[in-house]
Image (cartoon, rainbow, N blue to C red; front, side, top):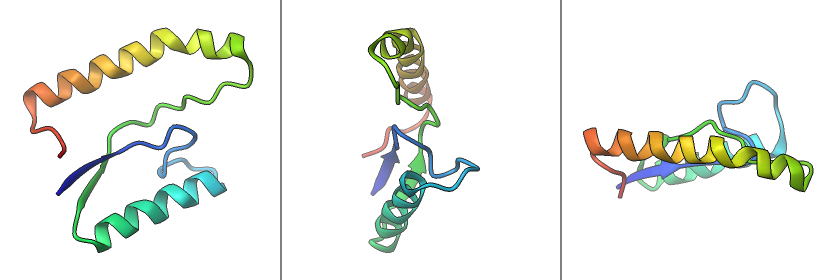
Length: 79
């Protein structure tokens, strides 16, 4: 099965080590060991320290959603 993977706090590809990054990597590894093909579909971080900062993310979230929709019109969507 093709799996789209997204870690909202920190991508498994982020250069700075953290528990979030480790958990994402372990989840991906578990899915791969179960025979799935895993693709990290976004590096976008949705963490916001304040409500104001969260509101500032809304345009970027919309743009990221649009990017993924566009991507999956030209390539097969994950299952």
